[in-house]
Every structure is written in C-alpha cells, then in structure tokens.
Image (tube, rainbow, N blue to C red):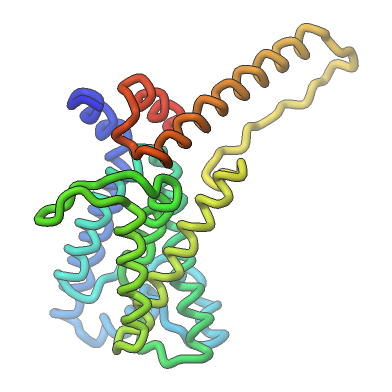
Length: 274
C-alpha cells in the first residue's frame, strides 16, 4: 500500500480513534484536576466511574462495566494505553473497518470487566479496575487471530509476526496473575478472549459489527419475477467476492501480508470498509 493510499485510509478511519484518545485524555485531566482540588469529591465520584467489584451492588452501577476504560491511574498509565490504542488501531484497519474496531474495542472493555467481576468472587481484586488496556487488547488479539502471519516492524527488534506478539503479551499477563495488580491482568485476559471470540465468529460468517439491513414489507400481493433475478445476481456477486476474500486470507496465512500484490491489498481494504 503506497503513501497516498495510507493517507486516504487514515482520513477515513482515524477520526473515531482520535475521538477515543481525546475522550480518554480529557477524562484523565478532569479527574486529575478534581483529585488535586477536591480530593473528597474525587473519592466520592470514583466508584461511579471506575469498576468496583462489590457483589450485587456492582450491577446497579452497570455503566461502570464500560466507563472504567476511560479512567486511568496516572499520566504514564493513560499515555501508554493511548500509544497502544493508536498503533493497534492502525494495524487493525489493514483488514477491518472503523465500525468493527469500535465494536471489538468496547466489547473488549466489557469482557475485561465481566471477567474481573466473576473472578472477584474467588480472588482479592483490589480497590477497583481502571484503564483502557482490556479494550485495546481485544482488537490486538483479534488481529493476531485473523492474520497470525502478518509481520510488524518493531524498533530494536525488527520484523516479527503478530502471533508471536500476541503470545508474548498473553504469557506476560499469565505470569503476572500473582502480582499485586492481578485484577488488571485478569481484565487483559478478558479482552483477549473477546478478540479471539470475535475472530472465530467472523471466520464462521458471523460479524457482530455488521449492520442489520432494514427490509421493507412488500405491500403488493403479487410476486414479480424480475426481483428474483436481481436477488440471484446479488447472491452470485457475494459468493464471488467471498471466494476472493477466502483466497487472499489463505495467501496471508501461508506467506504473510507482504506477499499480497497491490490489487489484492486494495481489494481487501475496500471489503473491510463496506
């Protein structure tokens, strides 16, 4: 993909990610200022934004299953998560649309808090769950599951396949389950499970991010033959397109993303943004 195509892609898909980053930074600045000026108010507000596992009481604050992903502990926490969000989204848009990213992102946040909540009945999880790490983990693992042979260039390391990056991150989280931040790492694994689940469903023809088409009821009681012909042509086009997508994905699995030619990359990008 040349520079012009990359610029067009960022213009089309980057706005939603930028909005997420701005929202996270804005929430952090507001809460940080509140904690510095009115500490008592901050501690009163915190349980209504962060996710606090407190048995049935947590369910009464159902919005915190998502809102916690906009709350961060300190400047380094928000900075690292926003950098990861930016780079993961750029990689994700190689194959998927911005709508798919948002769905997987927020499902990852939900998956992280749900697993955190379930595990809180068996382990001590700390005061509360904050941060966008689980949400960012979901599209990262979804991408690694979808295109494991895709290579990424990392500073000081060189080119490395997505499946190795994903495996390394998950292994680190598993080893950190005995640390003081056990809740955070459990949430990461919840986001990872969402990423894998989304890809499994997608490869079986189920896209949770796909809009349902509205079908208008036909007021006429008569059937028209030409409608059926159009449907047949539409079905044939969809079958042909799916076969092309399957062939390209097989090529990626065997030889990596870089083995695709310009036409194949452009075709895959167009399909991902429909």
